[in-house]
Image 1: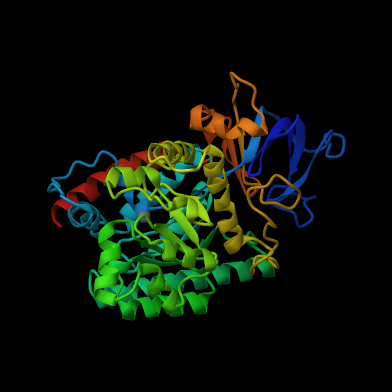
Image 2: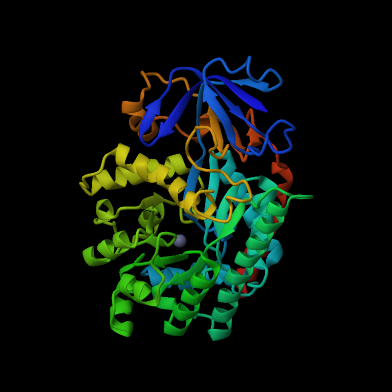
Length: 466
Ligand SMILES: [Zn+2]
C-alpha cells in the first residue's frame, strides 16, 4: 500500500483543488489489497492511522495522469531527421516525401526502439495513457505486440491499432485488418487469463482499437473489412478524417459522400470511434459524429506544423480529446498550443474548455478499459479513469509546483495555460506502480535512448533507399 500524505488533490474536470488530504493506493502484489490492486483504495483525511503499514509519500499536488488521445509512436525516431527529403508543396506531398518513406523503412527492431523511446518520453511528461495509431507497411504482422511489449516495459497504459491502408496494395490492406483483429484477440486472451488468475494475473495495460489510415487511402472493400473487424472485436475504429482538405474533397469526388457519412454507412461510427483531426469536416458531419457519440482527436501543434488549416468547428464537437499526432508527448504543451491557436482564430473556447478536452481522454480509456463497460469488470479492472476516488485506476502524477499566485479550481486552467508544465512532474504512477519516482524512471532510460539513437541511424539510412 502507498499513502500520499497531505497532498492537494487536483481534478481537471470539473476543475478543483482540494485542501491537503491523504490518498491510499493498492499496488500489485499487496497482500492486503483485497481485489483493489492497481486502484485508489481511499481518499480522505488522516488515513495514516488506518493504513499503518503503507509507504508514506509527501508531496504538493496530486492529479490524475494525463491522457494523449492520438499519437504515432513510429515517428519517435524522426526527431532531428537527417534524410534528403524533397520539398513538399502540400500535405499529400509531405506524406509521400516524408512519412510514407519513413513508415516503409520501419522494421521490428526500429519499431521496438521507437515505441520504447516514445513511451518513455510520454511517461516523463506525466502521460499515463497513450493512444497510438501505428504504420509499418513492411513489418505489419506482430507489430502491435511489439508495441504492447514496450508499453508493458515502460509501464504505461494505452490503446493500439494498425493504420490499415490500400496505398501499398490490397495485400497490405488485408494484412492491416488482420493485425488489428489478431491483436484484439491477443488482448481478449490476456484478459481472460487475468480473470482466471494464476501467474501473470495482471490484466494487460493495452487494449486494441481498429485502425484505418484515412478516407483517401481506404477504399470501400477495405472500409467494409474494417467495419467487420469493429463488429467482431467489439472495438471502435481509429482513423484520420479530414486532416487536410484533400481528404474531404476526395471523399465527395470518388465516393460521392462526406467522410463521416462514409464511415457511418459502413457502421464505423460509434461511442468507441476516434476520428483524428477532422479539420475539414462539415457542420453536418460534426452533428453526425456527435449523434454517434464518437471522439474527435484534436492535434493543434501538428495541424500548425503541417499547415493543414484550423478546425473552426472544434467547439461544435461534443467529445473533443487532445492528441499530439507524434509530436513530443508533452500534453501540457499540447494543451497550451490548443488554447493559443484557438484564441488566434477568435474561437469561443477558453482554457477551461480545453482542460475539459484534456480530461475527456479518460472517458475514452473508460469506454475501452473501464470496468463498468467491458470485459475488464470480471478481471477486476478499474471503475474509472481520471478521478481520484476509491475504485478508480491508480494512474497519478505527483507535482512539484510552487504556484507564484493562488491556485484554486477556478483558475486551474489558467495555471496550466500560462505556467505549470512537464518540468514540475515529480512522480508518475500507473496501475499503482511508479513509472517515475522522484524524477527517476523505473525503466532504463540510458539503454532505451542509446538503442533508439542506434535504430534512428538505421531508419534514416533505410529511408534513403525508399
Ligand atoms: Zn495522426
